[in-house]
Length: 336
Image 1 (tube, rainbow, N blue to C red):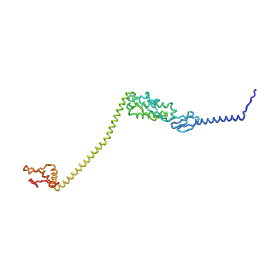
Image 2 (cartoon, one colour; image 1 turned 90 degrees about the vertical axis):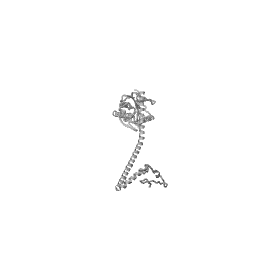
Image 3 (cartoon, rainbow, N blue to C red; image 1 turned 135 degrees about the vertical axis):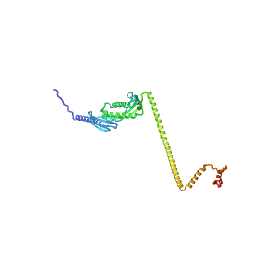
Image 4 (cartoon, one colour; image 1 turned 135 degrees about the horizontal axis):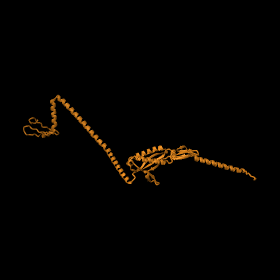
């Protein structure tokens, strides 16, 4: 039987071995600390939410900030910003729009084909549902959008879809998509959807519709000019009408006042007549003669001969500057 020899290291060797063990242990501890620092601390920016899971179960959802987790927990960040995609067209690498005829051509209520493009803006509303409720939530949203767009567009005529009903179509499509997203609960919501372009599918029909649109715009322009002319002329006409009415009212008031004055004058004359009938009749006679004579040519004759005296020449004789003498005659033709 062979003899075994046990080698006992000296004290210096033992110190080296212990020092090596300490270095290895310190390295392991440092490595563990580094791993904990990198795996247990994480930050979330304002554009994302973080879903923390532990062995497949959701622990919490974190918003913007700096957080700590256990090393065996995992973190998945979800983009919460608004995204956009085209419906009915695609965008090439150089930024050019490419028509997607499979999704862009739709039928209207009057059985016309229409090439209509939409731009959809959406964002994540529930990060947990977005990650776990659907395998491809963007594809699900695209299918929901296309189905509702076709349904809504089919309720309008081609003229309405190209002109006056665009705003209403956008509102109806958005409301329908939101209602369906609420039922499916895939963690997405629609921010806005707008019609980018709406036109017939062939160039000939496009030219015809453009002519109709130009005619409608011309009619609108003519109507606006007519309304402007009406708004400009109506105040002037109203002012003229008010002026005529005011003049008529003033003339009415003047005539009424004059009539009242005549009535008052007649009543006063009548009162005088009741007291002095003869004098009043003579005075009225003279006043009437005075009012008639200035408009008549006066001749004087004795009634027996054909002699006519030129009364006008006597009436115009001036005795003094500024004075006029009037020739009077008695019953026999003599001057008085």
